[in-house]
Image (cartoon, rainbow, N blue to C red; front, side, top):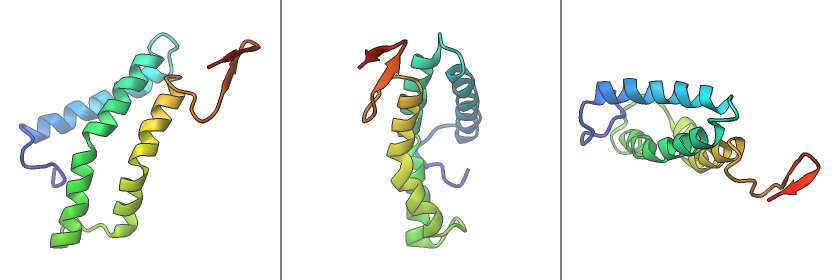
Length: 108
């Protein structure tokens, strides 16, 4: 709750809903039929929660709140784009910067 920006309505409900979305999306990545849409939705989710990560780091840097140091916040902020890419890669939405090969044919 402390990392939620003040402008988010019903923060407790939002936390529960986003947790459910993370679990559902993770399970959907395991199924071929849902993998693509799950990857897109999880990547969008990671983009949407980025403001909360920034607020959490800001609260620590400016106010000394949150109990976690820059050893936590810096990698978390730096790797958020990697998490977005990784989700899209696992979901076969992108193959950048690697090329995939499927059934012997080049898939681009």
